Image (cartoon, rainbow, N blue to C red; front, side):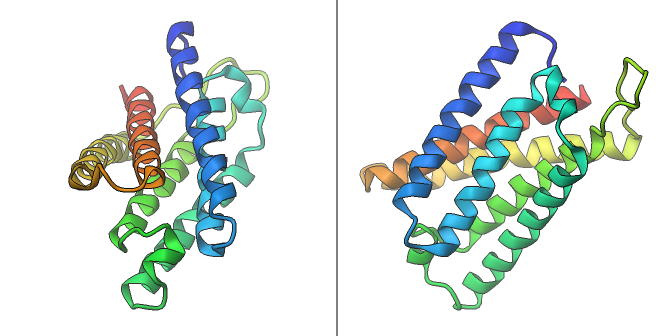
Length: 190
């Protein structure tokens, strides 16, 4: 998907840093199962995003990725609903309000779209499938939503910039993930 080696390495470094941050969050939140499952889904997403910039990504099984990210989308939607209905306390989810779960729904849904529109290349061909008009429109909408959400998340966190370091790291990680995903979505439709 990304052919410029400079951009390949930039994306690799960014998504590797995100993966390390998420792994640390996974370890620190391991006593909260909902948070742990969410962090595990995000780690998988960051690793696949890192792999997507390299040609060898197409050698990774396509269908399991699609299934995992579709399940993750539904998972975060269910967690949002549970939190919105008062079944889960914010502390169970890293202290975040319910709308943050919708941010995760957007990210996992975008990941599902990315994997869905980039099926493996047929054997013996040197090019990927072309994307439909609907796929392109969806990609443009997702790119815009990812960027808008990154800005909203950063703005929402600004008044609490003096809060716990873990919240700041979490916010920076999510904003970087949203921005990186928006850039990757844009490269797919541009």
